[in-house]
Length: 79
Image (tube, rainbow, N blue to C red; front, side, top):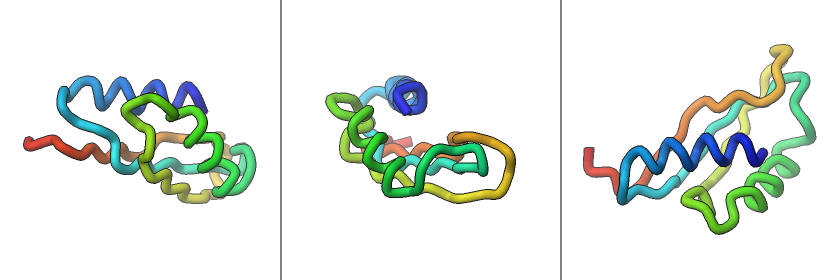
């Protein structure tokens, strides 16, 4: 989850003055835990970063993947 949060933060840092409001991930058959478990770990990994407080949306899939970053929604971006 820390790797995911670092990616999300890097995307937010590309647009100064923004924060992360929502992160959408796809959790496949190889992904760990249920959605609540993933949200807990995301919240811990995001603490004291631009992603702190962001909503994590988990979309379940039967694909043979672990976790895939689908979308990052930023707040405060006027573009």
